[in-house]
Image (tube, rainbow, N blue to C red; front, top):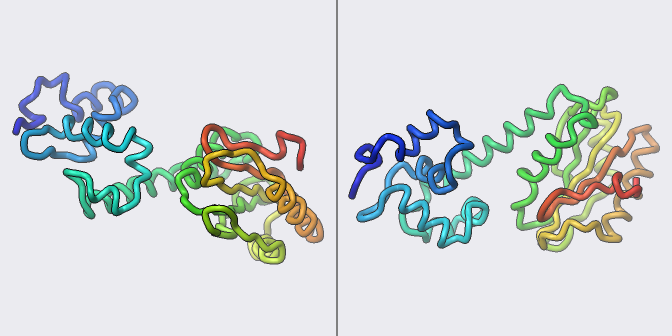
Length: 225
């Protein structure tokens, strides 16, 4: 089995990353750096290409459950644990982008975080991003986790969370595991109920995002908040 060290320097993923930056590498090259080694007869890059073809792309590979991931040749529980750690670091990095900023002035950062946090969830998860009077993030809390079709959100629990955190405003977000981000009538109804409950303690609902394929859909942008 040939080693990456035996390749010409301009073909070595690690050296190419250092020379070009991570954005200059292909999905297979980035995955090869993560894999570190190949298997008998296949270099790390060959194996990366095989895995991308087997799973149907990078997103499907990164979103695979433990059983499916570990069944693939060249992978296993250690690699799965390592990958989950990398993904969680990425989510926490995106969450830190929101710290000490007016969230209304950073819509792209909010959307990036919500996509990373919610899009691959297999159940419906309902989040609250609680903000202070300057519309800076205090905390993000998971308010409900439901079946593949629905999550139950209780207004009184959301009010308690807002009071506990001393929030002045909140942004809600949840995912549609079906992949279609179009807000449902139930999404609009729970938003109205939460808005009314929070109004009793002078907490403003800024927006409610629905995450699925493509860009998250904003209920505020639709004129529904």
